[in-house]
Length: 79
Image (cartoon, rainbow, N blue to C red):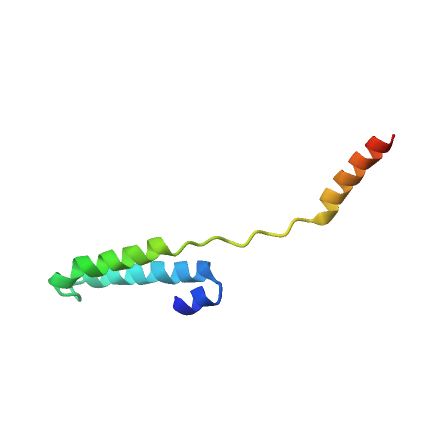
């Protein structure tokens, strides 16, 4: 997760955090985590998931579409 965040891949980090949360809950539910630690561990995993936001990079706009629209406006203004 840390590597994904530091290399600018928050969506990968979010996926890894969600996987960690699922594995944490599975470990708790199967009894592999002692009772006194269960609540704190589950809370920490949930908190981690909530802190990592996946914001996909915006796709670049095709300049040709905007240029033709702007050119059409300029042509109309010149008429």
